[in-house]
Length: 369
Image (cartoon, rainbow, N blue to C red; front, side):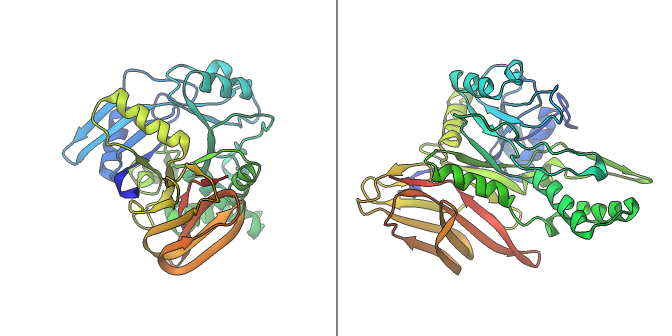
């Protein structure tokens, strides 16, 4: 049944020169093609850019570029609580000061809204404040960005410097620079606080879809005589992405393909993959029983529901329900689990990379009621 679904990989948190990115849309699209992505959604800060959507091609392939928006209240201090709006097809920055109104208007417009990088830490070394989600008196949002590459790496640097308790700014800067130049040595997975938050929402019976993204800016760095683009778009597009399963293939019609992709993302027919550690395209998580289903689907637990996981390579596979690991295998590529209780069941796969075990795949849940 899972083989009938069409797989596409993409990145959905990207900035261009319309806000604080370094490249225009066409150049970003070509980097996405070079990285092997099928689609990208550009989300500039507080501006919904029109006239740029479409398929972009090069000698290496093509990619579908769509536009959304990352909305936040510019008058807030710090400017936290960033919101990713997809397929609302309208400008939403006017609602930034009221997070619930922002969510409501996104949904009313037919779009989906995700809370961006929910947990962040202050990094005084570069005057980077906590831009996580701070306004929790909300409801109705579509999901969480459980793994934002740039945000998680910022937290990783902050935690490392805090553990060292170094007061010398020069030495701290050298440690941060070393980490910045080889981020793959330090990236181990999503922020544990965000995973715990997601599990708490699921335990409360909410349907909360998960996505993973780059937050790509193509940031330039200047340190004395050193001038370098750190975290280039193409590098980040080879790291944390969202993989989507569609009931039919994209056909080249932009409106048709946009609807298919965004609906699947909003419903959680997807997983988050750390593709730098190994390709995740072949991952599948299904439920067999009355009708069957994939990630994001729902069925009754009492009709012979059987969860089946297929990983692209031997790894550690965990089935997680509301924050509790209910089944786990090591160095395997398949796992079958028969649940006896209702709940939201999701999958984590961990794989050795760069000398240690790291988070690799995080599926959306299958809901057993």
